[in-house]
Image (tube, rainbow, N blue to C red; front, side):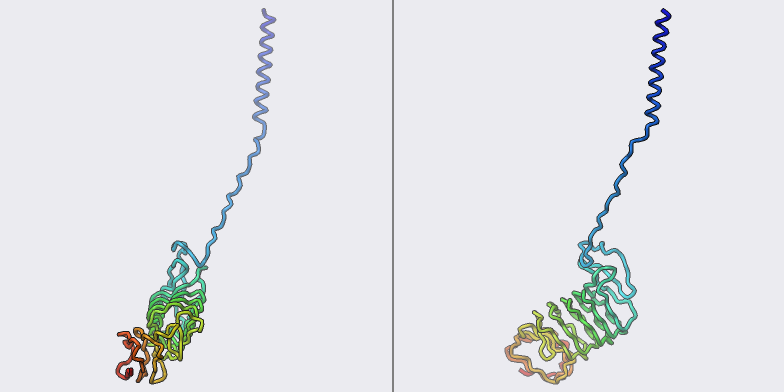
Length: 266
């Protein structure tokens, strides 16, 4: 039946046309808006410049006057390489505190006449400022806690002040300092005491340092002193020293003194 065939053909053409129009609308539809990705918010790491668990956190840096190395809580002056006669060590370098003078850091630098240490300093290591033979002025900070052996050996200093916070001294530290005659330890120091320019322990039971430049030619050890420590007697001009019979004398007490002019009286 031709009439039926024409009807079916017409309906198929209409379906094809509708499908084509639908696809065109889909293709022309704008893309759905996309959410822009939020930038990643980085939280800056807080670093205490006075402390680092990892030495590598300090990175690599240099200073024109000092060779440096890192330590768990700050920086160490490893070696002085500057040319100045008056040395001022800063509290911080590259944002990190200077906490220690390394062993022999200034050894033999005879051009230096003055050193001002920073208020961040905790320790002066063994021989840290040894053999600076023209060094006549030093300023020790109140932050200093530890002074190791031979720290100031052969310096030209005439006087020194030791703060109340110094809790550990490894004597001798002043051997060869022949001009040193004035020593003052702050009264509130819990470990040491000075009396007439001589250093004792706090109870004055141990004599720890009779300085090389002690001006009198005789010295009487206080009766309270039970022991004279190793290398404690440094005085070069001492002719007579009176020591109580009960006082123990370390075998090396007079090791750095001049035995040729000194008479021990007990």
